[in-house]
Image 1 (cartoon, one colour):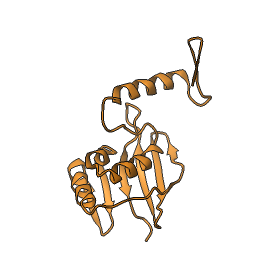
Image 2 (tube, rainbow, N blue to C red):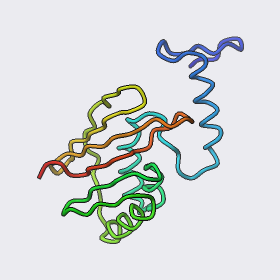
Image 3 (tube, rainbow, N blue to C red):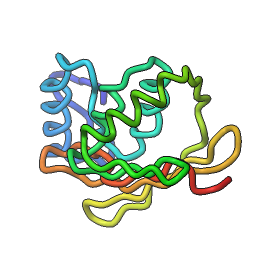
Image 4 (cartoon, helix red, strand yellow):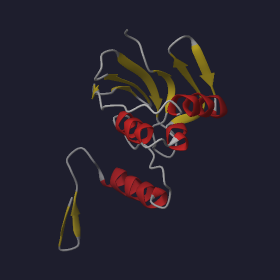
Length: 147
């Protein structure tokens, strides 16, 4: 976007309504410490940043309140409290996660499949769902689908 004599030039794929909605969301969430994902592609980057910072609450904020998380070894966590407990235990081990290679999100309306090829091998698969406010948290997360 380039301001020009009081006019904002929008990218071709962003109409004026979307621009103002996103600008409003960014203004609304600017005071919060955990920026929400405005696109499903934001989630993988936010995950690595927050995990490496040891930010359990930041990780929990990436999920819907009733999301399901399937950790390796068969541990299934459903809902905010269970996901918080799983990440508290995981981050207590002091992991350092290198960024992987995310695939473009596969979208169908308000649902998106996200996936990342992990730097150390393996891959993830997640389902994100667009919320009424335009944010994209994960509804389901399988962080390790390949050995």
